Length: 289
Image (cartoon, rainbow, N blue to C red; front, side, top):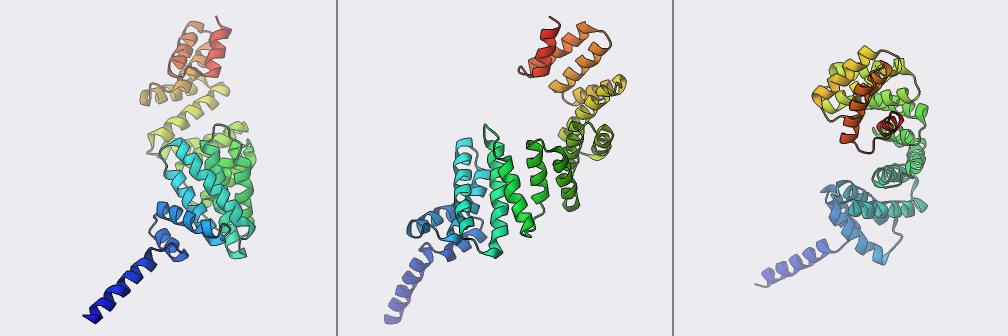
């Protein structure tokens, strides 16, 4: 009877210890990918030690993943702000072996903040911290891709192309090929852009990517004066998606170039029915009133 009582008593103590917020609990919950538990537990621990580096890192990482999975914009904003706050504090007292990883996560947090914010002012901070992570020797397969996307948001086209090309060494995908093509098109390096677009069109099974690729190819062919080629691409796009505004706009430009303003205006009106704020179509309608 006494032994049973002692066993029960020890069981209560062990349960109490196990349920007491601690670094060990954070580690266990992290391994279980229970990010909400990590986030909540870290808040309790930071009340006692606000600048505990390990806890700040756990909370910053957990907040990032909660932000990415959040279904409401306001909630995502709150989590990502919390992530950035914790990771910036963690940087102040980070050990050399963890510094690169924290810079990497902070760069991703700024990238995500930039993507969900009304005003995109954070791409430069994403580049800064991701570059710091690379310079510190931190390895992650997606650093180059995040850098490419961030450089693109900053209109740093050649830097974006270089980063995307590096990303292809880690993971070749049709989405990456399209990103590279878009950057080459911005630089008016049409031959290079078309090479990537042809690859996507020939091999991709993703309709959304092939539609975007054909639309961009149509735009390039139109600019080169190949009206038949451009028309074929735009019409192929519309066969797959009748509500693709840029394809109608492109067909309008072809009709304009061929002197058929009635048909051109018709296509631009279709563009505006699909996308009421299509700036180029609005300008054309105003021009030919």
